[in-house]
Amino acid sequence: MGSALRPLRRFGSTRKKSYGLGRRVTDLNASGKSILLIEHNMDMVARLCSRVVVMAVGKHLTEGKPADVARNPAVIEAYLGDVA
Image (tube, rainbow, N blue to C red; front, side, top):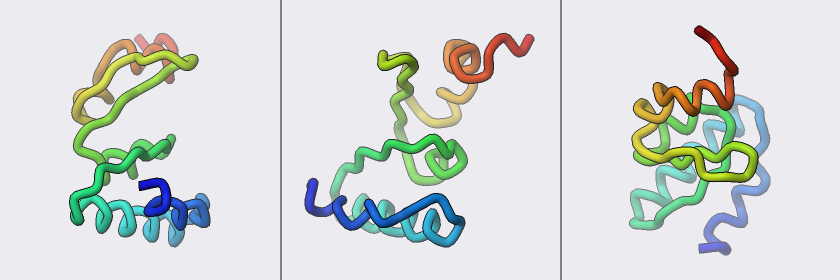
C-alpha cells in the first residue's frame, strides 16, 4: 500500500494537480484498495470519500459519511467557531 501511494507525493494544490490526485485515488479505490487521504479540501474529500474521520487538536472528533460529518455541530465548532 505504501508503495502504491508513493507517487501521490508529487501532487500539489493546483486545480490540475488536484484533479490528477482525484483520478489516482479513484482508480486505486476501484481496484479494491483502501485509501488513507489526509486532506483539508473538503469539497475534494466529499467527492472522493464514502467515509471520513475528523480529527481536531490531534484527537478523534467524529466519523461517518462526508455530508453527515459536515453538519456535525462538534465539527462546525472545532473548525468554524461559534457561528450561531
